[in-house]
Image (cartoon, rainbow, N blue to C red; front, side, top):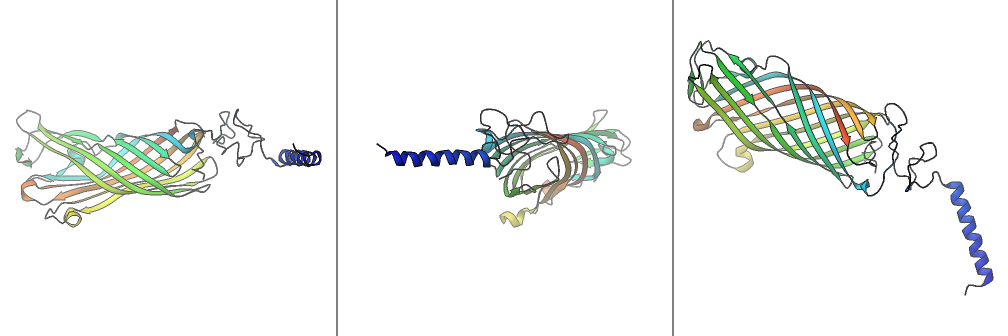
Amino acid sequence: MIPANSAFHIGIRITLAAVALTVSSPAPACESAPCDPAVCAPGAVDCGDLVGSSLFGPSPWTTFRTRPFSDYQVRLVAEGGGLAVLSNRGEFGPGATRIDFRSAAGQDNLAFYTRWSAELELGRRHTVIFLYQPLSTEGVHTPSTDERYEGVTFAAGHPVRTEFAFPFYRLSYLNELFAGNAGYFSVGFTGQIRNADYRFTRLDGEAFSRTKSVGFVPALKVRGEVSLGRASFLGFEADGIYAPISVLNGSDNETVGAILDASVRAGVRVHPQADAFLNVRYLGGGATNTDPSNYAKNWLHFLFVGLGASFDLLPGRTRNHRLP
């Protein structure tokens, strides 16, 4: 049994603690219902991180970090716009003619492109990204002299359809080195599978040649954002590597390859779970294989300008921007 005087003192302490909590608490508990942004401070423990701001001010969809989704997120990203080919030349097979895909495969005009990705954030610092980039064009040209691809000769004066397809699939991992109100910076690595397929067909059906290549390309990756208030941001992303094969694995294979996929973007938050952005991207690279029996050389430089959007599938992760 607790003595009366002890019970009295305990009661006084409980009462004072309750009064102090009521006076000092910056916000009501929000576990059972959404908080009112006017009374719930962003830093409140029970309310989590405020994510209700948007380009258009306080959002009617204002939400806060809610459990159990506070430690992971699934994000879908789509991008589309105009593609300009700065240069794209290749040689395929011994004694091959150098082809300019800009004039042969309809790449001398702007083309439409799309780019799709899905991201999984884990533990608020780890991100896994799957990307698919379709990329194809075709055109018809009439050679003024004989042309040769993969050992097949295409006689001058006969129209040739050239089909260029270079889609790729990419799986990446990023680790955030810095994350806070000012933005974030991440580093990681990428594995890309290219699926190149080039076809040359005389329109009268008298000649056909095909060059195809499926290969794995490892690369390094960086990504970051700088927040411009709670409703806008600037970001960048780059995947790249230069790879002399003989140096990497000690073989006598003199193939040299490189890739650089770099972009900058400016975006705004249009919803607590969605961003829209303008993106400018450079994609360049290629490979040279000097083996006489399998000679190939193809280097390309593309410029992309497009609009994109990202959408978080799960509620409760702040977009400003991975607050610790």
